[in-house]
Length: 280
Ligand SMILES: Nc1ncnc2c1ncn2[C@@H]1O[C@H](COP(=O)(O)OP(=O)(O)O)[C@@H](O)[C@H]1O
Ligand SMILES: [Mg+2]
Image 1 (cartoon, rainbow, N blue to C red):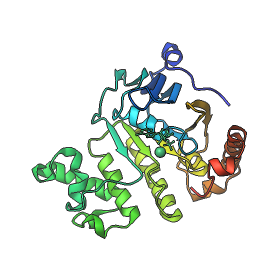
Image 2 (image 1 turned 30 degrees about the vertical axis):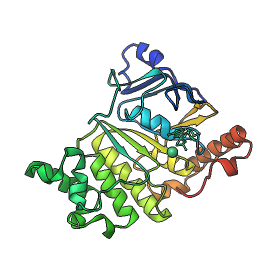
Image 3 (image 1 turned 90 degrees about the horizontal axis):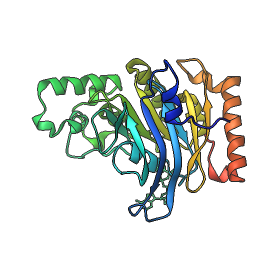
Image 4 (image 1 turned 180 degrees about the vertical axis):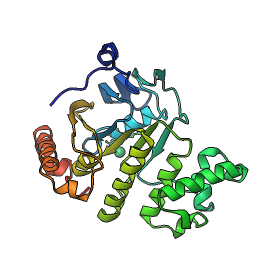
């Protein structure tokens, strides 16, 4: 178990590329910071191109952390910077996907992908071509003209992923994007996300409460725990890529997943209840 290096420590390393995302001494409480602190002393740096999974029990503050990183809420104290610029509000170089994609039911799949580009009707042919390219990337070319009610849960989440990619963001933020899907669809979409990430060389911050999903996807698994929550572990996942279904059965995969499960037992005292280790 290693603790996360602080942004300052990494920035000081001579010759090292600066981390893309630097979170320093973050604290946050709802109610304008007057409520109970949800996050405290939270520091985390994410290197360019890294896929970092944030793992933690339900209610530990994972979504809160992502809301802060995506600029939807402001920290009580501490700072968050992307490429050296403090995050003060939503920005187009950050793409987001949540557990349930918020699709507008009266718009087609293509127009839902185009939502971040403003009113879909106003989108020019270039934007529409880009939406179609992204829909092809997530295997939805044939559904471009369909409406949300015609989609399965997995297809709807694919629309969410295509939409996340519209402005070619450098940082991807995903909050339990596959949690509502069945196990098979979840596995398929995890592997698709990996290939999208590998092709686009993006930096990703991926929240999950599934240990296998975190180990399957991430270069590093950052564990949030405590109340208020902070980073209690930062575990490298040196498994070769691309990872496949076979990865799930490898000894290395299982050792890392087992160690994480043990850690949660130590943290929670009753890990089975606190953190489901079910199928990714
Ligand atoms: N809008 C809110 N107002 C007040 N408290 C909240 C709000 N959203 C979340 N919380 C509280 O903050 C804590 C962390 O929540 P959250 O970040 O959603 O956890 P996680 O995503 O890890 O399940 C929980 O105790 C939750 O009840
Ligand atoms: Mg959450």
